Amino acid sequence: MRKCPYCKIEVGGAPEKCPLCQSRLTGEPESPYFPEQPLLQFRSFLYKLQMFIAWAVIIACLALDFLQKLRFPGFPALHWSLLLAMWIIAVEFLIVRLFKPGSTTARTVTLVVTIVLILLLVTSHFFGFLWLVRDWIVPVTISASLIANFVFTLVDKQGNSMSYLLSGLLFGTVPFLVLYIIQREMPLTWIICLIISITLFAGAIIFKGRMVSGELRKRFHL
Image (cartoon, rainbow, N blue to C red; front, top):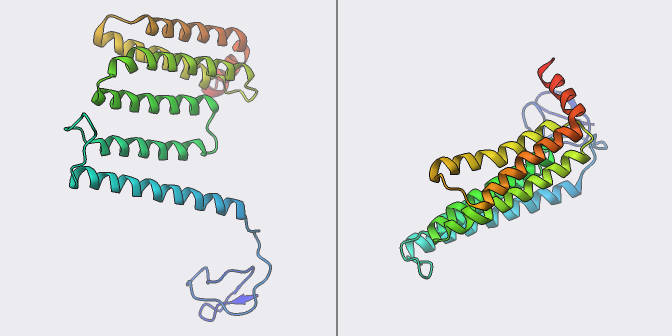
């Protein structure tokens, strides 16, 4: 058993330093209380490595853009490094969220799609194809994610129907309302997206109505 020469305590296991004063322990180590997990350590190393590479790329691109005045072809006034940094930071955030325990599939899908679409909208605004992303890519992608969430609702066995239902309804109707307030005239793709949102919300209640009512009573203590 290891001992601390300063605190005069005995420490079991195989630690190198005293838990009280952080001094180096003396004596023979015992078998460690907790087994080593090389797979988790390797994954942690890979995560830190890719984060280091990401920040190295961001710093290098910012230097080339602002110090070297390297511009994107055809866009002399565009600071492309800021857009690239925005994408890389968003990807790093999504990596953390995707591996966070406790997140449901519907929340994960909705979060990923929302962040990616926002990035596409910002990027397309500066590159001049905002209309394509706004009127076609965004509603089609949202419709596909709504269908995916509806499938997840049908196969869910853990009583998380409300998260699927609300994420589907809000994800399909809120962007439609915001865009309608801004421009009044709605493309057909957005109208189809709204129809899919409301239809799948009603379908999920029809197929999962008993589970939804039970989840409501549980969440609101009814």
